[in-house]
Amino acid sequence: MPRYLRACVPGGTFFFTVALLERRSHLLTEHIDDLRLAFVDARRRRPFTIEAIVILPDHLHCLWTLPPGDSDFSVRWYDIKARFSARIPPGERLSARRLRKSERGIWQRRFWEHVIRDERDFWLHGDYIHYNPVKHGHTEKAADWPYSSFQRFVQRGFYPLNWAASEKVCDLTME
Image 1 (cartoon, one colour):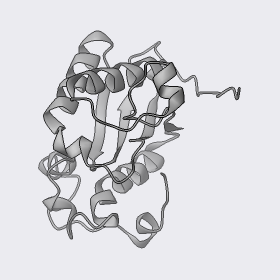
Image 2 (cartoon, helix red, strand yellow):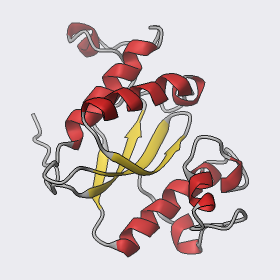
Image 3 (cartoon, one colour):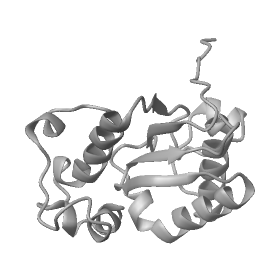
């Protein structure tokens, strides 16, 4: 069995990509309120700051900052995935392995993380997050996607409402 090495940076800021098992599914946006509640519950149990986020139909990207002295983002993702899965009705296809383990077939088992190294890295990943709905053809402008922290960034003066990603961001692949 492969061993996954995760970054251990107490109080660090991380970029994540988390995806559904069925990449053509729309569960995340169809059950957006359930996903929001899963995040609220997880943050209540183990606090963290969501710096930026985008929810697409079949995957999400986000930037989190963990509390000082804490580096355990894996347990938080486990909690969010489990709480979301418990809230939505069953009906997904299950592999024999998932049946044996009594698992739902909603999420990919793993997720991708990246430690944010500096302010430039933070903004590059933030831009990627906010550009993602455009990249995937869900909308023509970042401002039009309702499941994103983009509007919060506009309100704080970080982006103009008509913001468009740079060519560098458009060419990034982080999924």
